[in-house]
Amino acid sequence: MPAPPQTVRRRKVFYIPGYDPFPARRYRELYRTEGTKQAEISDYGLHVEATTGDGPYGWHASGLIDDARVTADFEVLLWSDIVRDSMSNSIPGTYWQLVCTSWIYIASGTLRRLAVLPKGPLAAALYPIGVLILQLLAAMLAAHLVGWGLSTLFAAAALWAIGPGTIVTWGTSLLYWTPFFAIVVLVLRWFKSQDRRIYAYYLMHDYAFSASQNGATPTALQTRMDEFRGIIATALLQDYDEVLVVGHSSGAHLAVSILADLLRDTPNRSARPALSFLSIGHVIPMVSFLPDAWHLRKDLQFLSERDELVWIDVTAQGDGCCFALCDPVGVSGVATRDKQWPLVFSAQFSRTMAAERWKAQRRQYFKLHFQYLCAFENPLDYDYFQITAGPLTLGQRYATRAPSPSRIDVPVSKYTNTSA
Image (cartoon, rainbow, N blue to C red; front, side, top):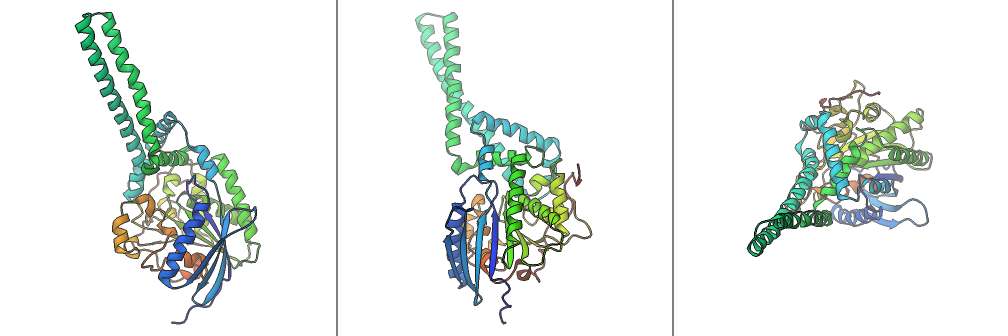
């Protein structure tokens, strides 16, 4: 079968990360290393080089795919500084976030509604709560054992030496409670130092940030999203064949609102460059199901009806940190008769990853949450590098793709209003 005609020679790609405090360099290196692997597996050409100058962080990619040469300019739309500012540096602050966030999700009925959807994200949401509580209990148990041992030894020695009395009583109490609090603090600090492997504090900060205003967008983040909208709007006026916005994890719901506002601002936008939106590993219901997320629900509804863009949503059941195959518009209860998007399908990790690697990584949920940005040994119809550096627009690539039959698109959210 002959290759389809080339329609993209220059592409602009905007990547919106999720709740991630790490530098943008991480994404360039991931693209470079994984792109090299995918090019070798799929037998095409891909060259990546860093951008120079003092502008926004990004990179250039040159693809030779299906005998077509394509250049792609990447830009990471960073909000990692907002993420870092939202993370409590104190242990008591994190436990206070645990209490407040749990109350918001439980009291609003959102937790019960989320439980109807695939269990992976709910388990991921409960994970930091459970781990932090267990860490506190472990710290208190260790402190109790040490305090009990010291106070018991003192009491035995004092009773033998001087007999019962006030000194023994006060000394026993002092030797129990003084080390108790110190040991609790030391053990909790040790647990926190191990969080780079446990992710309990990180995930707690993530969910607390999403729920901090009952689903409404924090002011600092809204200001940054307005800046992003202006950057994307400028790219749409330049000589590109396609402007592709990629929203990963929490970045997906940011991209929804950014693009909705962008299309409201430019109702008569030119058809060129093509405007495409790829959402991957989304966690949209964690926000859209909250009481005050009416603006996000409004944006989901608006974007789902637009002819001016193509919206493809890719998740995978192997990704325990996303709402796999959940249509974010449908489950949020805002789908209308005019709904066109998103096209929802699975990246099918169990089939597209090598059997040995899938077996080794299937429980490494955080790693799999980034697999959408990585190489596949047995790629089917999802190849991040062909999407971003190939000759077809997102709409052309998936023009005949049917949605996954196992997708979930029935209304689940308790809150479906799209105005305050």
